[in-house]
Length: 362
Figure 1 (cartoon, rainbow, N blue to C red):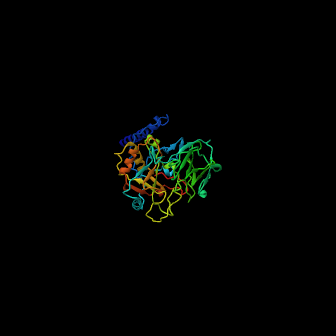
Figure 2 (cartoon, helix red, strand yellow):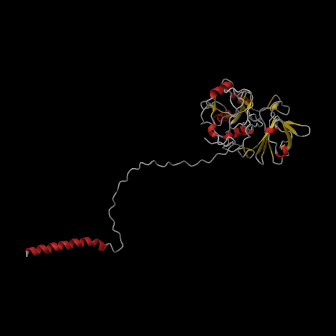
């Protein structure tokens, strides 16, 4: 009897255990409600992968210099490209010595007259309807003939050095409707209304085309002149956004460096600079004591530098005559800046193509 009681108790316990196991399924499993279990936190392994950097937004390219509604070449043209972060050229010290480390700079532009002529290289803006005048060239094989053999020369155009000049006699014409630049060297009017010139060059100011290799232009280096001139309207804007044209007395024969296309020299001395060589004002030259006008010019010499474009007086920088220039103020650059504060720049990394003025932006 005791054994039977034990057996019945054991069977009852088993049935109770089975009922407990089946109860959740009966109560919850058929009603459609979920049975929620306590959340369990599982630590995730620390990632060793290099995180993907967050890139800054691509900056909107700044517009380059402009004049009369036309770009003076695109913003990424070599004339308009910064050189303040580029390495120093390995020939820098030799170049500076050959030009003159103690020779003072000279702003070859200003207001008023010098020897009966405006100071600097003038230009004129003409419309697309400007009648053309025939031009005959001394170096016709390296000159652009112009549409129909003509250049849009207005009556009594401004000539470098004045109408009676015996110097370079440059004439620069910006045709504003098509944004085309016409430049002449050694230009003289003739009695029949035509002109003669040493050479002539035409540029699409919205493009990158360079002169054919070995060709001159209105400048010895085969470069355009207007893009390298300091203009007073740039001073009013607060900045100059291009390299500045300058001259030295002696350059190297048989060699030029991009973007130049031509040399004009008789000396093969490797210590002489080549046409097209880029220079800049050293970063540690203190410009804070100069006038606001001169600071703008000097800062451009640090940021965009200088391009050697022609034979002439050493360390002469080029600009446009304007009655708003203060000549006494400009002379303060001459009084305090010498060649020792200049360095040649290795700009080879900027070149995308030897036949294009478009430049890699540093």
